[in-house]
Amino acid sequence: MKLKKCKECNSLINVINECNCNNNSIKCCDQDMVDLVPNSTDASFEKHIPEINISDNYIEVKVNHVMEDEHYIEFISYVGDDFEFIKYFKPGEEATIKLPYKKGSKVYSYCNKHGLWMKEVE
Ligand SMILES: [Fe+2]
View 1 (cartoon, rainbow, N blue to C red):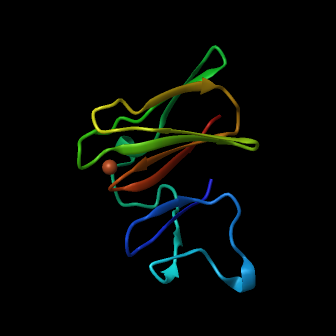
View 2: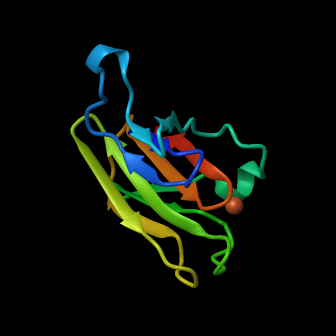
């Protein structure tokens, strides 16, 4: 999973294939969009990192974060070698998903204020 953000207008994109034309990058507001690096924001790890429970060949993911109008988890993404699943949330909803277990996949959570977080599925 590769997310890019515009520092100017905060638009966010999910990159399937990166642009490498003549060393150019994907642009927004006349400037290069920057890569989002998981777990790099100075904020509470416990409130943002996906909590993973595995049972009966399913993973249940929960993010113990507030889901308020101004501050909430926008999505949880479950990413493996050949799949990517994204569940979007609205304020007031519970940030949780349940999907088939796949060892070595990664779970991402995205907070509208504190950015991208990731935990690998063991
Ligand atoms: Fe947050």
